[in-house]
Length: 225
Image 1: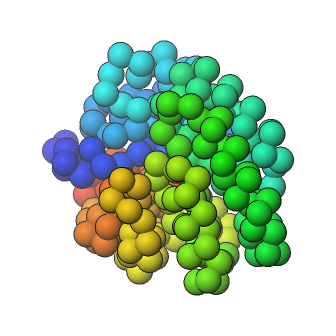
Image 2 (image 1 turned 45 degrees about the horizontal axis):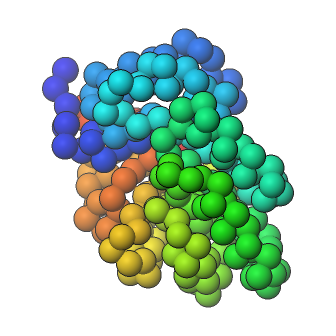
């Protein structure tokens, strides 16, 4: 079956479901190799398997920390980040405690962001902004603080709960507030090639989706990540 290889190179193919077993993860990793996805996004427990399978390839090993609620302590998240990097993760998508941000605890929030970036070392680190749960003012502050802390990418949403779905509008909101050296990742409900291209046109550099194969082959996808 033919597929859109250029689009595939912008997608981080995702399987972070709690019931995904080893066979499912291997299917995702094999799909990343077959279709040329940018990266494989898996839960931390599967990072060693992904690193073993993808380590000698161009596909990045990606994982999510502090996901999906963001309420773990900064120390817990930093330890998880270091552990994931040691296990072979190339990229880390992390959630900060947006309850602190919404409470006006901006200093504590900023300290957490700095702790997470420091823990990541040379790995690529992305912040899940959870825009769906924030006012525009809160979102603008989070973006400012994340840029100041040194995140490599900002991501509109974890794709879970309050984070909301990816739209051209919220991708533009992030892209307009970030310098050129900070990338934008879109995630949440991306399931068609047309939707994926619209998000890229709006300013996204990467897309996170569990429907990666369906997107690049033109078949119907599910709700996605």
